[in-house]
View 1 (cartoon, rainbow, N blue to C red):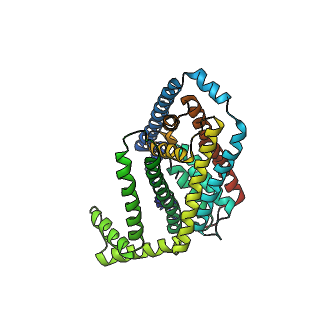
View 2 (cartoon, helix red, strand yellow; view 1 turned 135 degrees about the vertical axis):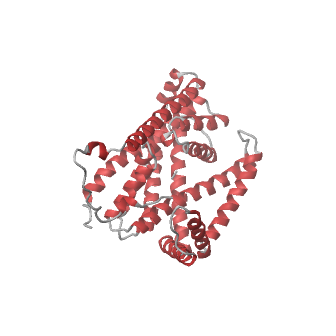
View 3 (cartoon, one colour; view 1 turned 90 degrees about the vertical axis):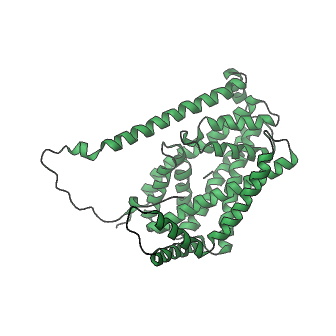
Length: 369
């Protein structure tokens, strides 16, 4: 469950030639020390995340009765239930691909290519050390190869994330209200009764503000004023730039009817992913309602935002069983369902995304600049 800034990666033209002094070490110049230190920091962060995730998973394994009980629960999985689970996960990526195609332009991207890009951005890109930057960079590169300019690429990928985030907040806020009203809640129910209505109000207010050109004009003035370290255009220029950006954004998102379709595709994609978890839990004999599967997935998606953990590895596997177990099923069965869901909803799309990288590059040669 999935803004992007597309800037220097797609600038056209050549840099002016630089005359190097005699004796310059070109290898050292090509890899500045700051870049090396940055790469090591990313690797260290990735390793620390894996260690923390493994520790969180081990805590759940211990709570389930130990490794032998966890393996027994995996062996008892009814694999036939994984067929609908896998089909729903495929449907989730197909629907998000259709959303990207509508945003990027139906003449520029086929449904298959759009689905492949989604598998790279939100499948393979989820497990990369700098997630989701690598996936978004590939998606932007692939759209550029299909003739889209930088502004359209940024808006298409940005709106794709925008709709995903808003649907995630909307559906989970409504589900929180439903669960608090009909079931016991794992923690004090006061905070969801406060947070859920606040989220719904914020979604309504931001939707209204985003539809008005004046909002983007004022935002352009604020951003321009904040950039005190460089020369700034005058107020009229900044206001005009904000208005142009709003016009471009409305052109990509389309009229209200088209935006409803985009929201519908986003809702469908999200619910299809939840259905994958729902059937994975059934397969593991951890039967809970669809609303509980949605609650567990929502909590897991929030935990996946932890910067150290690529894709929330380890923590997601701990959160889902904890939430599911609260509503009755054994921890071992809930853990087995969570592991199966991760295999179908995270690792399989990542593998498919790696295949899509090769297939997309082979299918369409780069356009000439």
